[in-house]
Length: 586
Image 1 (spheres, rainbow, N blue to C red):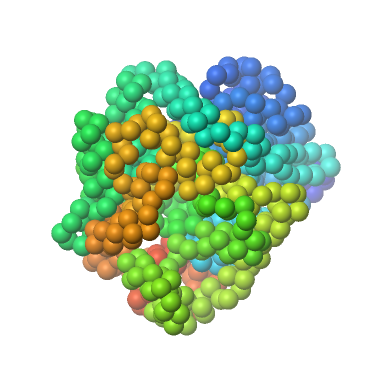
Image 2: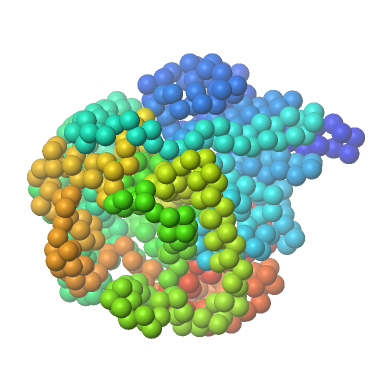
C-alpha cells in the first residue's frame, strides 16, 4: 500500500511525506521517471512515458482516450492532482481535514497515518454499511470520518498553500446510443474480445491463466476467446458442489458442461469451513469493505485444492458487466424515478436477507404469486436487528440513492444510464480486491470487458443490452456450441424464452441449489461458530459502545446468515481499528 501525506503545521507551513513503490499485484503501480507521478491499474496500447506526458492533470478526460483501467496521481510539496478514469476499476482513498490530506490505495494505508480514536468512527456510515452487507454508501463516505473514496470519472485538485481541495466529476457515464444495429454491435464486441485475449497473451506470454468458470454468460465468453487465442488455461469454480446433498449445484453443472465441450482442464474447488479464520483475516487486511453483500467474499475464496496459475481472469467488477446488460431490463428506459430508486436501493441492501437464501427465495416467489402476507422483511430477531442498525440506516441509504437518481435525472440521464452510472461510479471500484476479482488482492488479475470493450459499448443504444441481448447474440453468432447450455442459475442464452421454460429452469435451480451460497450452507458449521464466538467475545469494546444491542451475540448468531455475517464482519473491522492491528498490515 502506498501513502501520500500532507500536514499543515501550527505556523501554516506544510510538510509532505510519501511512500510510493511500484508493484504488479493485484494491478500495476507504475511511476514516472521523475517519481512525482504514478498510475494504479492497467494501460494498453500506450507507452508509460507517453501517458505521463499527456497532460491528464489539466484535462483528465484524456484518461478515457486510450485503452486503460486506472487512476493517476501527480504530487509535489505545493499541490496534488488525482483522477480516476471511467472504468471504475481501481480504488483510491483520500482523507481530508483542516490540517491533513492523506491518499492511499488502502483503507488501512490511511489509518496507519491518522490512527483515529473512537471519535473517528462514523457510526451512521457504519450502520449503512451493515445494512448493505459490508458495502460502501453511494455518497463515497466510509465508516471513518472525513475519509472518502474516489468515484469513476472524478478528479481531485489540492493546493497546499490555500489548503483547498476540490473533488468533482469531470465527465458523464452514459451511452451515446449511436449504434442501434445489433449485428454491428456484435462485430464490435467480437473484435474487442479478440483484442482482449491478444493483449493479455502479449503481456504475459508464458503465463497460465486461471479462469473462474461460473457457468454464466460472462465466464463462457472469456473461456472461448482465451482458448481461441491459444492461451494456457486452468478453470475452476469455488463453492459447495452439492448444496442439498444429492444433485450437483446448478452453476457447477453448467461449468462442467462448458468444460467438457471445450475440452479444458477444470476442477470444482470445495469451500472449506475449517479455514474460515485465515480467509476472514485475508479479507480484513486486503478488502475490509466492498460492494453490497461484501461479507460473502470470505465464503467465495478458497486456496485449498485450487489449480496453479499465474494470472487470474474474470468477467465481473467495474463498468464492464454493466456495458453488456447487467441490470438493464426490457423497456428499462420507461422506469419511473420511484421505480428506479426502489431498484437501486435493492441493489444496495438486497444481499442482506431477512431469511436464509433458499427460504428467502421461496418466500419471494410466494409473494409474487399473490401471498401478500408472507413476510420477507422481518426475519428472526428482527427487533434486535432494528435496535442495532435502526430505521435511520435504511432511511439514509434510501435518501442517498434517491439523491443520486434525481441528480442524474436532472442532467438528462435515461433510466438505463442512471443504473450504469450508479453501478460504475458508486459501486465499481469498491470490489477491486474481492475474492472473485483478485483472490482477495493476492493475484495479478484482469477482467475481460474492462477496459477493452468500454469505448465501443458506450456507443450502443440501451435496447441492444436489455436482458443482455448483445451478449446472447454474440454467443449465438460466434460461439454457437455454447447456446444449448443454460445460464449459471436459470435462464437461457437465447434472446426470447417462454415463461414455461423459465419456470421449469427456476424449479430445477431450487432443486439443485446455488453452489456459491456457502455462507448459507455452512452458517451453522462448528468452525464458523468457533470463529464467531472468538470475535464477538474479544476484549475490544468500541463496537458494543456504538451498538449496545449487539452485545447479545447469541441473538445475532440466530439471525439469518447474511445479517449475522454482516454484523460479524463489521465488528471485526471496528476491532481492528480499536486494537490498531492494521499497523501490522503491509
